[in-house]
Amino acid sequence: MKKTIHLLWSAFVLVTAVLIVASVTSLFMMCLAFPVGVPMAVAGSSYWFNVWLGFDKLCNAALGGDHKETVSSRLGKSVIWRYAPVFFNRKIDKTVSWMLSQVDPNHCEKSIDWNVGEIFPPLATGKKAA
Image (cartoon, rainbow, N blue to C red; front, side, top):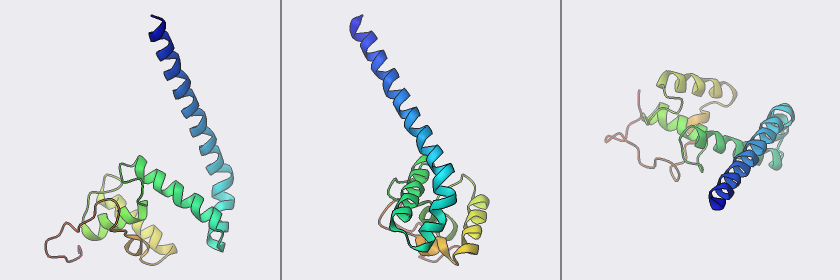
C-alpha cells in the first residue's frame, strides 16, 4: 500500500512539474520571444535564432513529426513531394507554405532537410508534385 501511494505521489509531482515548466515556457514565448525574439533573430542574434529553431522543432514534434526536423521542412515535403500533411490537410499546408513564402520566397522548398524525418521522396519518378 505504501509503495502504491509513493508511486502515485511521484507521478503527481512529475505531472505538476511538467505543467509548470510548460506554462512558464508558454509565457516566455508569448511575452518575450514573439515581440523581442523575432526581430532579434532576423537581425542576426544567434541566441534568438536558436530559441526559435528549438521552438519550431518542438512544434513539429507536437504535430507528430521528427523532433530534429522543422515544420518548414515537413511543409516542403508535404507540398512539393506529397508527403503526409503537417496540419492534417494539404490545403492548410499549402496556405501556410504560401504565407511563409511571402516573407522568404520558396522558404519551405529551401528548408527541406532530407537527413531527418521521412527521408526518401515518395514519387517513383523523382519529379515534384504539380
